[in-house]
Amino acid sequence: MRFITNYFYHRFIFYSLLFSPFLIGNIVAQHITPSDRVTLHVNVRENPDTQSDIVGMLRANDTAELLESIRYWYKIKLDGQIIGFVSKAWTRVTDAVPDPATTNGKTDLIVGSWNIKWFGYYNVDKRNYPEMANIIQKMDIIAIQELRGDEYKDRLDTLVSYLAKNGFKYNYLVSQPTGYFNHPDKNDPIAPKGDYIERYGFLWDIDRIDLVNPQSPFSFVSTPIINNAVFRQVPIYSDFKVSNGNGFDFRILTIHTVFKEKINEVRRDEIQFINDWIIDQVGSQTNLEKNIIAIGDFNANPKNQPSHFADIVSGTTDYRVLFEEPLSAGENSLKTTIQQKSNPGPGYFEKPVYDHALVSNETSYALPSDTMKRAAGDLGIVEFDQEDKWKQLNNWYKVIRAMSDHRPIWFKLNYDAQDFD
Image 1: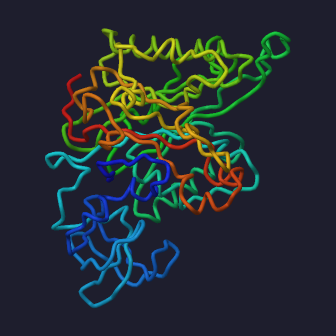
Image 2: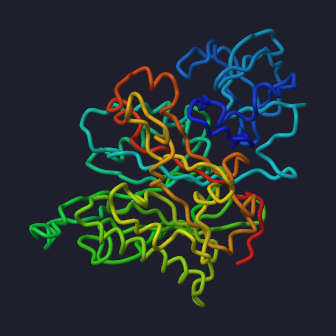
Image 3: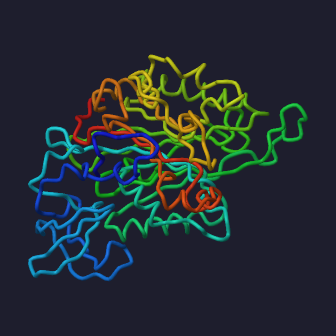
């Protein structure tokens, strides 16, 4: 689980730099060894491709000579003179400069979120699972929005299988369907609600994260979950904890608010509810969990619509709005939706910032910085759409079908933080 400490967020930087263990120009090591997460071995492949033939194994605690570093892969030489490639995702360089993803020897806990557009909805599956897995395997836990249709479970199973091919063991949970169905106001000519159903989910690395209550894995924040008075899709939350260290645990909620302008008042009520929920969770005498996270697609401040997110959330001191902190540090905003215009003009890559992470002030001790910054590698937005292979398609609809119309977001916590609540 490694992210570089200096995240050059300019839109033309290659996405590979975001997830490589360090800037390639800084490599001074001569050997590669499996990461701490590998219990048996790492496959050595003939070519830098997960479908390439396996020519050897790099066992846990073994080392191999580093020959070359390329995007996503190390070229190595084993003791038996076998030359091949191992994935950067589950290996590390030894005798190198200090790993920028660690602080005083303590690794990071990476929390992410991704609105994967209509995941499971289409009968013809055009998802690029290897690329999706390459993103998700960098995160310890990721909230998923827009699980739809009848194929969501098969698609999640396929995604988990690709993560397994890369050496990672993930589990997931999925909510019941929630939304509007035969909504009583759907024919209201002033504010038609319209039917829409989706599910929420969480994916997590079972080697690093445990679900606190497997018998009751999640809760909805409000009922009923169909035709709710506040939410169109009622958010869920779950409790997780790190698998070792000092037992840090946290409550994480995932949300997908309404975008539709005609019912923007629903989005206002949704955001107001989450604002109040975070405050109530922290202030409650019966709820002992004070490490509270609300993350997902808030559809914050859509163009030419009322700015409910800005009115309710921006500037609050009741909790931290992590993806607004880079702005307070002098960094530009950065879109959380993909490029969908061939010749974007100035400022195109800065807004909208629809996706956000709200974190209770009581969790600040586990965050890496008083002010979270992309340039410091504290948090980030995965600009996968800026990779050449996607831009060269020259068809953003194909990118959406293969990946999503949203970019994943992530932020760091200290994996070895003590649990003070």
